[in-house]
Length: 453
Figure 1: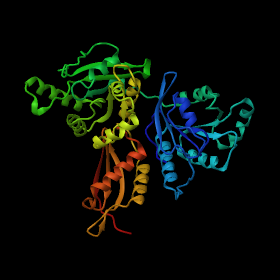
Figure 2: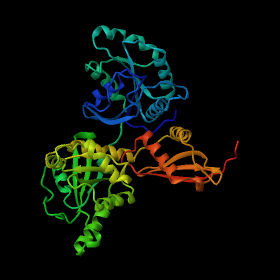
Figure 3: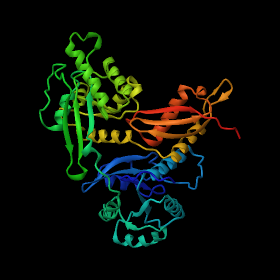
Figure 4: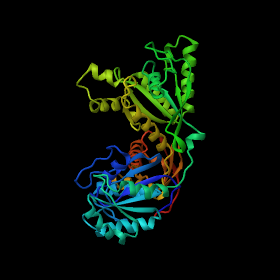
């Protein structure tokens, strides 16, 4: 298994139904992964930042591992789950192997342990479901796996502190990149969508003029912003922009320069927060804003503001109902996460910051070549490349050549044999496998001859 750069990433792995998602939720201190007794509920990776006593790291929950040593399951869901776990292991610097103390060590646990020994990662065994001292005594059974064992109960919060005391000191030290280079976040959208109100809510300070009159903010205002304390504090540079005006009706040079400054703010940003008005919904002008973000190849997050007002206007409306209509109206922004907020009441403001961090991390994702090619091969097996004029597009191998945006070169026999719908399918498969929510991704086909076998 390939080694990746040293990163503070912890992956939770193990066979199905041992309590991986329950442990994940306990460590991130909120319910993120679905916890259920049925096997195989977690099918995709779930990644989230964890903060344990000021120590930040990324935590990845994975589906249960069912087959190993490159066995391929006939069930595509199981095969996809196993691929996700392989990706998590390849990305992580530290692995928590979760086992069920009530079941004892089973052959599949030993199979997982063998894979992890070969990976070269630092591993600790969490013997889960140790709900009482009597069960804890059975933890010695797992010594045969060859890793340190700590009995825990994710459900009852037993042994979690001891697990983290063992884990945190072993995480690789990383400099805080935001201290020297703050994360630049541009907040954009049409006038009066609530951009300035959102920033004021974040800062809890009326630094930006808020008015019901569209177009109050004429200049792009940059404001330093810090979350947390000490070495792990996150440093931001928030950019409040003037609302993008209708270019065909900009009657003054002021509006023209306002649009120009907004475009420049997008280009200078690391992540763009596109603000939408929940009451009016996406408009043609919003689509133009989205197009500017895509053209600039920036990470993007959609914030649907004024959700409290939308609920007041229609008490039967729900986010579940609103979301599909929004996706249908902005289909080309399907890669961007959506968070419903209220700058006025503070609803989901903290979650929006977490989403900004998450998008920024996705834009910097580095995929190991081996895992990337296995995912692409699986995609080709599910839906073979097209045949054009009697010749099929052949995919030889792929490699990632850049981040921010994610740039992937795929070497093929003849790029002219590709079709846009198949490339869109391949891109969706990569997003399903690696996340990349909010991150722009580009696939370039490169001709490379290879003798047919």
